[in-house]
Image (cartoon, rainbow, N blue to C red; front, side):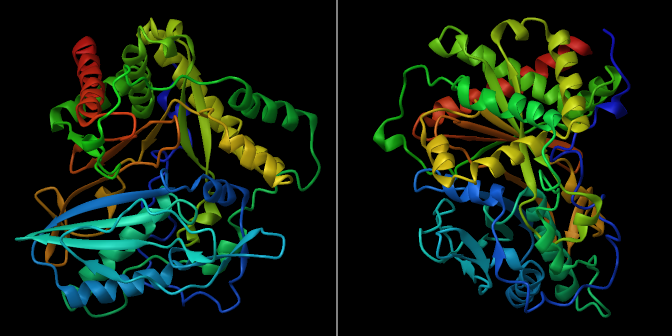
Length: 475
């Protein structure tokens, strides 16, 4: 195979930029003052409006993140750390209101409280249609010396990297308070006023060029005129008593050996590890749909794309993402090596052409006629077959001490976490990759209205088996 150097294959997906290692002055001991009184109200961006329209009772635009820690939690210290971390990220408590034209805007809100409960709150409650907080929800469940944090983020307000910003600040604040440390908090410096510029790519504000329109059409037209395959349920709908909450995500932890082998194989083949994982995702979905009516349609994978510029890494948690899409038909999945080469090349192209900006630009045009965007999202027409996110090893890099390869957060030891992007009608499957303490975890979220618990387990097992096949074939 003719492969380029792996460094050229980087693309601005969630795995590309760790929310910790790529933040300027991440060890700056000074923290900014609270947000300016003049920060709100703020207008919605097109991408925020998209997620607000996507928010519905059956498919809320939320993503719960579950974190497990061992040790006895200090409630007083944690409550104070939570309050201080929330103050640094005003979008996590902001309210949504509407102007006279019905266009949404952000207004200042009050931080939510911590739910100390054995049963977590519903992580999939959508925003109301009236003025409401789409802010963060925190539930703490303690069993013996094991503490589980469930943090429910709303995608209207914050993306995955923004969620990591908040989690990092919460970890650092709790470690500082629970150990009675002196001196300033070890937070990086942030600037809340940068939230005004979270949509600062100047799309079409200096005139529209023909090349821009051509690229825009190439990215957005297939989403609206070419129907993607749906992950088949093989005509086995779950029974009424098999309908769990879609928050019941499944997680599989690869061994350290398997994790190292996948990284070694990617390096040996001069591709990014993410390219390899996406290739095996295509192979899994193609094999799953084989023999069904969906096999004739292209498999289209949605990849979250980070739009932050360097100066945006001083911004508090916000939604500064867009989407890129990779499509392949069954015939494209016959040759594993050729499929991997094509994915590597396309990932390079996504970065080079800033393809995520063109989905954002398409939303901007749709927002000129909001009814058109509502119509487009309301059709029984999936943008994507499935979602794939790679959150990398961000929590491995939190500036906290290590104990047996795990981060020590005051009197707690962080054991691991999981979470996946929200699903939408007919985009039934969302997979996310997390890495921590030398092990990769695969988190699987499936639409419980389409898949039984057994089918969800089978789909996750199929992907894990595909990864093991890659290890066997390349060893």
